[in-house]
Length: 337
Image (cartoon, rainbow, N blue to C red; front, top):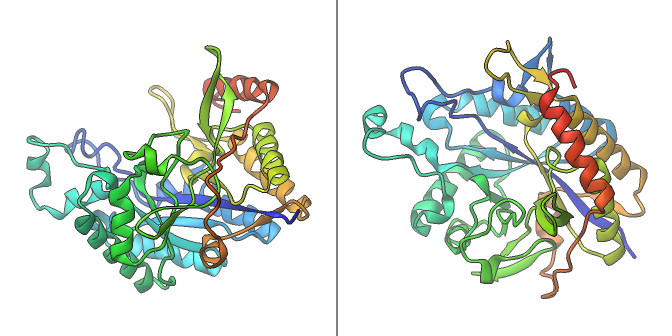
């Protein structure tokens, strides 16, 4: 059986930073939310690029563009320049809540309404306009026109696909069943592989898997660095390879590699557990080229084909799942882990 495709995807975005909750006390956070400095080192994007580069991997970086309403174009343009210099794949990501800052009276508006951050709730024409603007921004920043789109917060729905068609983007990765059900589950409920559910737009979901739940039974989980142990990732990948399920899409963010300080603690700390998971994941993929081919969405968009109607579940073993529960609980409690 040929090697399956594995896509290491990273959502690159700035942070509202509490500005909507208390605009007088807080402001959005830009490059610090991407680079994630702590203890004299950058643990976010520079760390990811270093590990990917070590193995010659091309990750998929879904870059958020609407934040320019607050920051202007230069900060994220500099991020895209670093990604391109490192040979990485740049695709489009949108959080529509940033459009709030396009209104000069945005603070006053907060007293009457809350910003919307749900791509699937927007009319297709309005969302398509944001996509077209975002694609043009990425091109101004030196990237190729995006072939793929991911909705902020994995807010999936038919409106997203209809907007993608209007904007000329043919590959989506907004479904994440282990995180949030799509608005149209009868059409978009898929956990792996590639489907063509609507409007000629294919969907490659963030892979979901089943794991034992502490309360009994099983729960669907998203395949992420912060929420999945390495043992679970390896088990899921081995099952996918044995069944020919391709691609497997893994999700992370730069900010997952630091711990933000709770009240009473100064500064931030590296998240050593998550950093170790990502290192081990990349080393494992590199050691098994017979099973896995790390693939960008730019490559996959041209050759991934719509799969069958089957969507066999991938499962984590009880030992791996409960090991993750213990490790994550300890990681949450110990500042230095």
